[in-house]
Length: 336
Ligand code: P6P
Figure 1 (cartoon, helix red, strand yellow):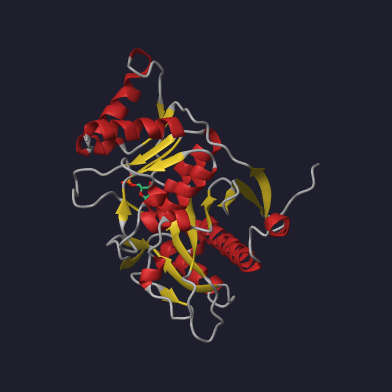
Figure 2 (cartoon, protein in one colour):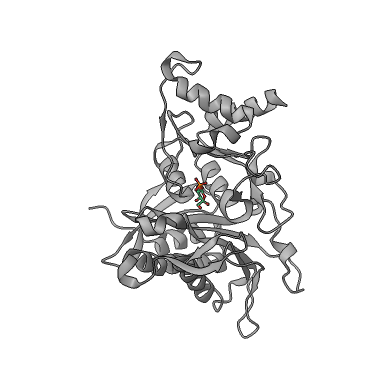
């Protein structure tokens, strides 16, 4: 039986090997992982824990908050605010940024998260997850402001998610490839189960919410029509379709066996660039996919190069197997 490598040992070796992970960042990632374990336990209780259903409130997006959305948010805030590794946090569930209280030491990192992505799936027992992104705060001694979070995704120093499914699996990058850690509930620790994750450049599986077809822009319609035409169409091969309506689950499948995920702009709300949020969904997931050899675009440009202007801004997302994303980008270019 190969010796189990815990998340802690993996991070210590990453830190020792090439100083790639400063000790403060290692501490931050271990705290986030512990918070994900706590969230996993709450999620797994389900109806037994009295945590299903709505909380009777709305978040900044105007979406009804589930009880577990708020629980997960509070777990992440409470786990991270006292350690001295963070200066501030931002969350899908909070309008503004959360400054680490003055009673605690301030660190140099900014943590952004969607505490429980896919929460419409909570009550029907389908996989959901936590997505997180880590940035560095500006190198000055003034207090952190919301504008300090508005950094392009190519400035992330760590990104990852924890998927609460049949297994609880933490997936992480610090810019040196993607590693996966499965929660060993008997030991209560995340154990390395895959490293150097690679997304195949080609695929026969696409993920999109087909009910929005009549609202898509022509390049997306063309791409999906060609997938549906299968072997007799221009692609010369049949495609399969998946849509979990939980980005974490769809991205985990793509990291595990390839595929392409699309949540593109559509005409339902033409002034919105898309549904998904740039800072704490598209950027962390985009970096993970790129670190695994895939691509992530908004149809016109690399998602990680987008300069954010608002904390909760939305973006059109096409990510996964590189050759499929490049095909989508070329269709958008032809359209323009
Ligand atoms: P739709 C979940 O609410 C989410 O933000 C992503 O996790 C998911 O991919 C998408 O929205 C699902 O959206 O419109 O298909 O319900």
